[in-house]
Structure formats: structure tokens, C-alpha cells
Length: 477
Image 1: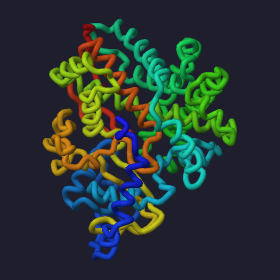
Image 2: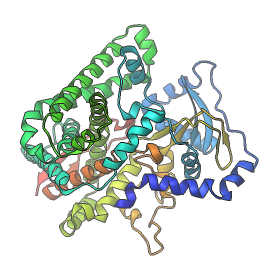
Image 3: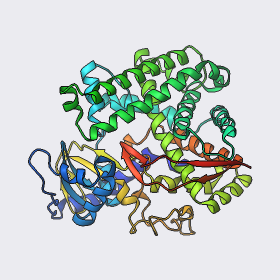
Image 4: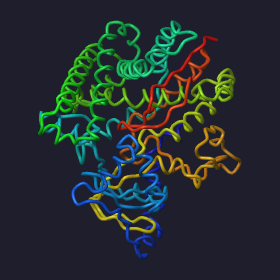
């Protein structure tokens, strides 16, 4: 499992391969092709084309068709977003190798506009430059190391509490699946922050956790509405969608701030205690960082877990094989469980697009990208490409089995799927999220049979979500 989380080591090796050898020199000196440009209108670009194709919720399919028509690299302006889209994993490796010490990405316009309007200072996800690097280095030391047994014990308390609640739905569809998963995602984060004292304080914190879960869900629901009317326009016209968004963010920050204040008073032995012992971090900065960690964990882990349960509910034989495998292996050492999660995140990547704004010219295999361009890696396209994955639209966990050659059984290019990103700006909570999802699946499968009532399609609401409600019926074993 350690190899799954060595992003910083991998990016250094990538730089050596492409920047410390003749490879990059060859790439730079070779003649470059012109980047194909999708023609559009002067101000809005091809925005009307994406609206006709289903709007922002179908952007992944729209961009996939563009790649089929224009190739692995093209440029297109969608409204205010003028981006260079790439889908070749080799080009992605080259981009990461040249992204610089302080890689930058883009954030939802509405979130940035809120921060600017109300003078709100946020955590690591919103930082850039030296400030980001300083705190990222600190958190790398505490977030990317192996979790001790006390964290696992606290995690098990969280998931067992949920599964005990689900017993009331035995033989029925789980009534509030995504809301429950939001709640336990935040509970996992709280358990990680306070450590062994979680079991003693969980009841006192339950109302705070429930309130924050609802607030975070509301923030993302409001943010999605700006795919039709931009946030700046909504604010200028004083539309309800902007007012609703402001109220949702206000409530989420206030709820998270109240929760973090309570956690800081508990004197636990978790992540929060580790950060508090770093004496050069002001208390207000620690609160900013912790608030954003909690908010970020709620959405991404909840939906990844939902996609995992949904997929297992569709594939009874894989579900049974996993249950059998877990009888013989601890969840941390179960290769089949890891393979299932890799396959879920390949088919349903939470981040179907990864962005970078390189400070210098970037040299890809066949193209040169000018400095300060917005580069968008099309992870949905690459992870569903038959060149990189055999039968890419089929759920086949065994494709991730290692052969004697150390290559994968049905994966031609592992870099075509990057569920946690890559490089210095990869997901800081990836190890924590992975273990939480593995534990949730493990405990759920050992206790229940899952049956997904009907299939759904992918839609985008900032991240990959189902286009309809997922209904899963459970039967206690």
C-alpha cells in the first residue's frame, strides 16, 4: 500500500526521467505542431455548444467527443474558461515534471468571489506560492505517513455506528444514503483530528457534525447552479442563487469554526494535536486549515464511497468474492479490496478534470504550451480509453492484478487514471480517504448483502456524481 501514496517520490522520479536526461531536451528541440483550436464566438466561445450538449453536467462527455475529433490536445474557450485540454498520459507526465515548485490550479469562481467579497481567508486548498508550500510541507509530514492503530480504532467506531443505524433498513432501500455518507465522512475527519478521545466525545459532537454535513452539502448544491449563470453576473444582478450560495457558505464556515473550536479544547492525540505542537503556526491559521480539511473531506469521500457501494451492488459475484477475500485478509492487506477501489475510481473519477497553470512554457510530446495557460487534464477521457485499459467501460477489478513482469493484468498505462492527482499538489488527504473507504466497504460487505436497484449515469456537479438518486437495498447476513 505504501506505493499508492508516494506522490512526492514519484514526481521527483518523473522529473529525473524527463528533465535530467536527454528526453526533455529532445522534446524541446523537436519541431512542435500547432494546437488545434475549436472555433467559437468572441466572448462566450463555444458555450452554446456545451449547453446544447447537456450543459455543465455533461461536460465530461462533451470533452471526450472533442478529443475524439481533435486529438489528445486541443484548445477551446467555454464561456470565461479558455483552456488547453490534454488526454495523453505521457503529456500529463511531462506537465507534472515541469509544473514548478509552486503549482497552481483553478478554483470555482463562486468560491473565490465569496472570499474576495467578504475578506474570507481560507486554508491550504486556496493557497498559492510560498505560503502554500510552507503549510503543505508541514502537513505532508503528518498526513502522508502510515496511520497508527488508534486512528483505525476511531474509524471503526464511526463506521459501526452507521451500520448499526442501517439495521433499521434491513430488507429495504437505505433511505438517506448520500446524507449518511456526508455525515460519516465528517465524523471520520473528526476522529482523525482528535484520536483516541473520539469515542468519549462523539455524542457531544453529533449535532455539530450533522449540522456541518447539511451545510457542506448545501454549498455544493448551490455552487453547481453557477454553471448556467456565472457567479459574478449572479452577484451583480442580486439573484437568489448568489444569495443562497452566500448563506450556505456562511453557515458552513460558522459550523466548521464552532466544531473546530470544540475539538481544540479536547486535548486529543490526533492530527489536531500534532499540528498544535508546531509552534510557528498561529492558532487562527490552524483553524483555517482544519476548517477547510473538514469541508473538503465531506464531499469527495462521501461520493467516492457511494460509487463504490453502488458498483458492488451491481456486481454480485465481485461482492461475494470480496466477502470471501475479507474472511482471509485484514482490510488493510486485502489486494482484492484495493483493486476494487482502484477500479471504482478509474470508472468514476471524482476529479474528471485536473488543472494546472504553469509559470513557464511547457513542452509536451508534440506541442508547446505557453506560460500561464490554463491546462486541463481530461481524466475521464484517459481513464475510459481502450489504449490504456482493456475493455475500459467494464468493471474489472482483476485488471489490477500484478503479473510476473510486475505489469498489471489489464492496464497498459496506469498513469491514465489519477484519482488523487499527482505531484506536489496531489490530494493531501489521500491516505486517510483511501483507508476510510476501504474500511467502510469492508465492514459493510461483511455485514450486508447489497443490491443496487437501478443503474445511473455520470453527471458533473463540480465532481462526478450520479445523474439520479442511487437506491441500494441491504439485507443483513
